[in-house]
Structure formats: C-alpha cells, structure tokens
Image (tube, rainbow, N blue to C red; front, side, top):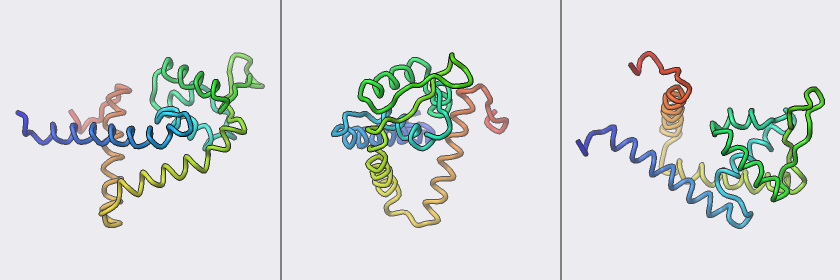
Length: 155
C-alpha cells in the first residue's frame, strides 16, 4: 500500500507546501512576519482600494475566522494594517494597510518572484503552463471538498 501513486502525490505536495512555508518564513523573519501573515498583508495590499473586510480575507485565503482574527490582530500590533468602520455599515470594519504596510509591498513582490523562479526552474514554458494548469485543477478539487461542492467526476 505504501507505493500507491496517490500516496506519493499527496506526500510530495505536503512536502512542497512545507518547503515553501519554510522558505517564506526565512525571508519574512527579517520583517517580523511569518508566511501566513505575509499572505494576508499581500492580499490586503493587492486589494486596498476594494474595502477588504475580515470576511473577505477569510473567504479569499480560505482560513478560519479565528485564524484570520489572530492574523489581523498581529498585523495591527505590528502597525501594518488598521481597521476603520465602514461608511455604509457601522458593524463592518474595513482593513487598510498603514504606511509601514505599504512599505512592504516591493519586498513581498520580490519574495513571490523568488519563489516562482525556484519552483519553475528547469521547466520549459510548456511544462510551466501544464504545471500551473494541474495545480489549478488540484486546488479546485481540494477546495470543492472543503466547501462540500465535490466535482461529479471525482465520485
């Protein structure tokens, strides 16, 4: 049972995820961030003009409410974000990057480019496109399980 291909695939993906998190944690350490915090601030920076809420962040990053609450609290403590009451709904908080958060943008882009380069080195353009297509399919499959919308071809 140990040599079944699906065990190998899942194991390799987990190892890849761990390696990516390790690399990103190493790079983020100098900024006082971890990989998850950098994902959150990157999303906030990319969508800063859209009125991001904790709910939006939770949905987009596919993290639990308690995880998002902790991430936002730590980012706020580091003065990278601030929460403001939404104009249209006093119960909602809009998350905005601070000046310090904005200052991280270029660094976060550089790390993303480094990760992409490392992941794709040794692959032709066609292999890179196929790799990304397959990753997209795998991600859709896993996310459909998370949301209870299992694809019909997966049985």
